[in-house]
Length: 478
Image (cartoon, rainbow, N blue to C red):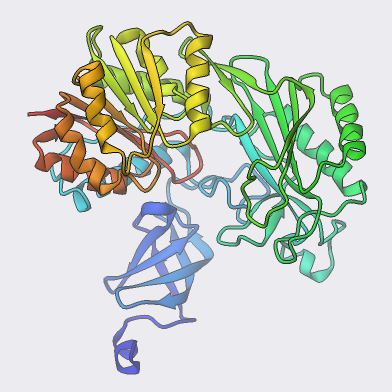
């Protein structure tokens, strides 16, 4: 940006302003205006009058930090967690839940109108989660030798060591971890486990992982807890399998926590955050946990994907099936099928399910879950949906033309080539479940070109106190 252009902008870096927050935007940032110039502010909610300091100035907008709330908006509430503001987890705790639901609906509406060009599309009120706290069935905590220090601690007012943390990432920082004492997103027993494992690892004499030097023993802790069965899985990721130390920890945990049904160690010595299959050992109990969802029993292995809000996942899938008006004669293709969750839940209401997923372990898990429930009208295959279109054509020959295609892609949405391929399958209805309304709206606009028209969009809140939102739409061939 030239100096001349910078002088023409209505704000400058470091400037202090007082503004009113108008609304929230995608990814949870609040939006204000100063002389019609857009300002993105972290931590505000609609109706707040706030003092801010400009941090970055771009050509069409600026980013600012919130300095003080001069006057609170109607939705502002007191956060329930003392880690709020430093932890990268639930950033909307200061936003009343009914206001969160409306803001998420507005996010979906904005994406449909601005990205998809659907000016008159109905977006229904957001379906709220039956639980606002304690709703996660899986939490991932990271060990680190680089603990984030609070403002009070920089003056030496802390009893915690600065070179040890077990917790969650600071927003925007891959190298800093907030040491978490208690997390509102998980159950009381999971919080007690977090405390116990932290105390043991801190006293063990073994170092936490350093993201800079790539040394250290303790990598991560994963706690998975079923909502509808008594199963509880604890996973410890370490750089090596020190049997004496880990067996001692296993004895301690199983003695103090009879709730544990699976205690597992995974070896991961590489620099990246994701384990690459170097080794897994069962320290105690089973190699899996089981969960019930919609009357179907799912077997979940340490690295299996499963919706993290079990209670709301039931509502998500029930709503999708109701919107699609399943019949007993439908052929259903389940693309991005994962461990078979959607397909197996739908199998009771359709004639045939065929699923495809890129990860071989997920496909095997889907087949295992089908056998576990005695479901014989569902088949699952491994394939890359960004490339293997010929397999979709062969399905039509082998299983018949689909009546319904279900897509539940990752945040990036559907690969462009796949979006343009889908209409050739000839399905009457496409159920599109998305965790990103922006890419969903983009893909819907392409499907509209092929004469698939959307019905009402249903937002579903899977993650209270965050800006994330799922949305469902059924597109029908005209």
